Length: 337
Image 1 (spheres, rainbow, N blue to C red):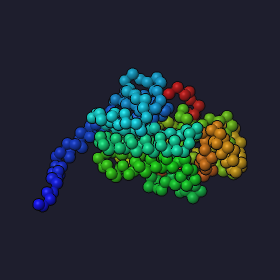
Image 2 (spheres, rainbow, N blue to C red):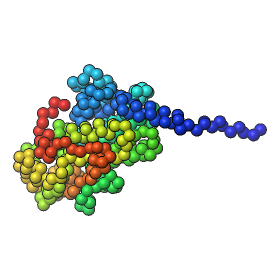
Image 3 (cartoon, helix red, strand yellow):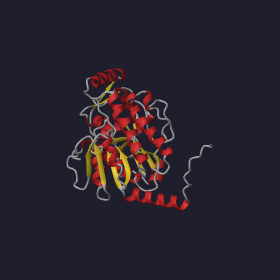
Image 4 (cartoon, rainbow, N blue to C red):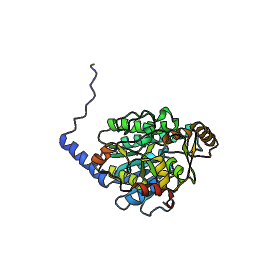
């Protein structure tokens, strides 16, 4: 007896496809926004702005202290099965992933499990339940500071940050996973944002470095740097949530400035240190979990890593709203949010 061919599903009609796409667009513009890492300082700032316009669902391993009443928050590990159930909701319009861990107290394996495995799970949920918008907050650090970098790096440039800094590998892997998801799932509007050094109340290496009472610099080096205010990054995320926006965007702030000039504007004294001596000292402090500034990141105060943000200005409608002095002074703001 001849083997019966399995019945093939009829092709989707153009009218049905348009209706599906219209419904997805409506969810993108008005549906609930899931924010991972919502309890971080950047996540809280985004949530406090976004919840006035649409429903916000927070996912974090930490409690959301001072949470607005209308924000739904789940204290959860997104790698667990319980997180998957949250994505069954038909009204989810977007997933914003801010939950990247940078904790000097934890080892590389724990970082990789949390950062990469967790993001793979989120992409699995987004694909399974057809979440129509995905926004990943990556970083311009993925390009890497190098002596042979062009003056301004475009979004199409290779991601070479891990060549010198192994701890950036997780972030590069997340960036690449999002790019792969972009091509595999054309109906999901995938956006990857790569901001330059974020300054503000955030607890990251650039802000912590500029908060030092005496700022160490590398003897013989004074690179041009790019910084961006935390609230300009929040604004870029909100622009990325607009229906129809997809792609990779570098996010920069005010015009570039020499590192020495930036420190001077903050009124901080500096102490120049030979590179070899600075690296040895930072490596020791890192091993003892006494700094959030890994030794390879010294290359950011040694070499240039500046980005071209033309695509964001033209395709995203983004432009920085904070000038250089205000952006730098944000590191000294009260950290209540």
